[in-house]
Length: 596
Ligand SMILES: Nc1ncnc2c1ncn2[C@@H]1O[C@H](COP(=O)(O)OP(=O)(O)OP(=O)(O)O)[C@@H](O)[C@H]1O
Image (cartoon, rainbow, N blue to C red; front, side, top):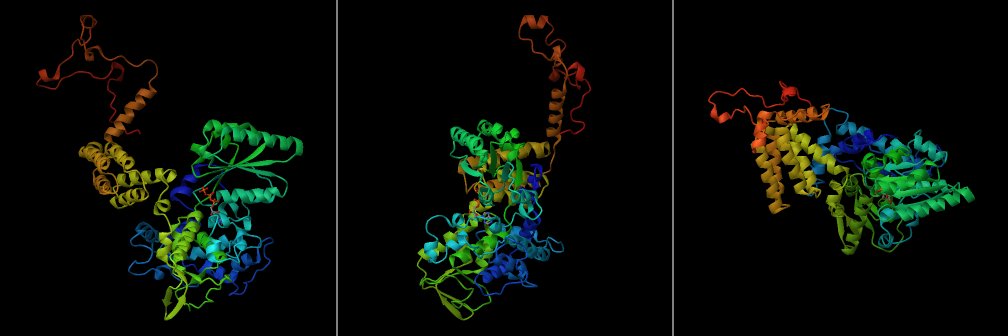
C-alpha cells in the first residue's frame, strides 16, 4: 500500500509492478491459465489439489490456484506469426512494437523471463478466486440460462459482472494481497478514509463497493456521490444525515465520492471537518494524481491507495470469466471444434458462439489494463457478430467445421476504441507522454521521440499542444547551437494551425526528428536562469540603473546626469570600455556556472 504520492509516479506511469512488467514484456501471453480455469468452470478438468486451503474461497478458485497455469515450454514468441499479421499490423502497430521491445533477450524481463513470471502473476490473480467460475450468488452466475444475446441486453457487461466480493476481485495484490494493510483493515472491518487512485477501469469503484458490502455486515451505511453531478448541497445533506445516524442510531456512514478530483477545493473543504471528527468515512476515487487534485488538508486525513493498471494475466481472468458467464466457447489453435469444445453452459437453442483463443489474449493486451474497456470490447464484438447474422458462418480449421457465430482477433480489435486504449488525453498520461517526448529529443533519440509523438497524436492529442512544446524546446534545449530550430518550431506550429490533423502529423514528425538530431545547448537557458536566481535572491532594494545607461529625453533629466558619459559604440573603432551592469554586480558573469 502506498501512502505517499511520490511513488505513484513510478508505479502508475512508466514503472509497473512485477506483474505489470512481466505483462509488458510478453509479446503474446497464451490464455492458457485463464483457459484452464474456464475448463475447470465448465467441468472439463478435474479439481486440482489444495481444496479447502483457504477459508472463504470458492471451490473453483481453489482449484485454479493449483492448476498448471501455462503448459511447460510454451513460448509466447513462438505463437507470434512471423509475418506479424497477428496483433500488429496495421491497426495497433504501437502495441506490437512496444511489447516486442520490452522483451529484451537475456534479461529476466525478456520473453522467457516474463513467461516464467507470468504463471505466478496469474496464480496471484487467482488467489482471491479470480477464476471464471461464477461464485454462487455472483453476477456471473445470474447470467446463466439465457441466450448470449439476452445476456448482453440491458446494463453493460462490465456492470453486470462487477465483482461483489474480494474473492472475485482480480489482481491489485500490491494493496489487497495477504498481509497488506488494507486487507487487514478490511478483515477487521476498520475502514479508514481512503483515496483510491488508479487509471480508468482498474477497479476503484468496484473495490469501494466491496468495502461497502463488507461494512454493511456491521451496520455501516454506504452513500455514493459522483463529483461530476453532485452539488455542494448534496454533500451537506449526506453529512447531515450521517450526523443524525451517528447521534441517534450510532451508525457509521461511508461516503463514496467517484471522481473526487472533479470537486473544486472549496467543495472538498466541505468534507474536511466531518472526516476529521469521524462523522463520515470518506472513500474517494480518482484517476488524477491526488497530490495535485485533492485538497492537501483532506489528503493528509486519508490513506492513498494506489491501484495499478490490471496486468494482462488479470485481464485474461476477467475476460474468461465473462466468456464463461456468457456461455461462449473458446476455440484453440490445436483442438477439434466440436460443439462440446470448451463446454459451455448455454442451454438455449441459439447457435453456439465461439471466440478464438488468440482473440482473448489480444483483447487482454489491447485494453491496456482497463477492465471496462476490455469487457465493453468483448461485448461490442459479440453483439456486432450476432447482429451481423453470421449464424451460418462456417469456421473451418484443421478440416473440421463448426456452425455458429465466430469471433476472431480482428473482431475484438474493432470492438475497441483505439484512442481510449492508447492515451488518456485529459489525465496524467498527457503529461507523462509530453515529458517522455521532451526527454527523448533532449537525449537525441529520434526513434523514441517519434514513438512518443505518435502515441500522443494517435491518442487524439491536440497537435498545437505538441507544437507549443516544440517551440519551447527549440530555445530551452537547442538554443544557439542551432538558432534555426526556433524558426522550425514556429513554422511547425503554424503549419499545424493551418492544416490540422491528420495532415499536420508529418510536420510535427519532421520537427521532432530535426530537434532530436540537432546539436544541443542550454547556454542561454542556463544563463537566463542564473539571472532570475540573482534577482530573486537579491536582498534589499534593487540597484539603480547606472546613470550613463539612462535615456535623457528632457533637459531636467540631462541636468540630473542621465546619459552622461555614455559611449555610443558605433562612434568607436576600437572596443569600448564601459560598464553595463549596476555597480554592485560588477564582474558577475551569468554565463559561468550552470545553475538551473
Ligand atoms: N480488479 C477487478 N476484478 C474484476 N473485475 C474488475 C476489476 N476491476 C474492474 N473490473 C471490471 O471492470 C468494471 C469497471 O471497473 P470500475 O468501475 O471499478 O473501474 P474504475 O477504476 O472505478 O474506473 P473509472 O475510473 O473509469 O471509474 C467493473 O464493473 C468490473 O466488471
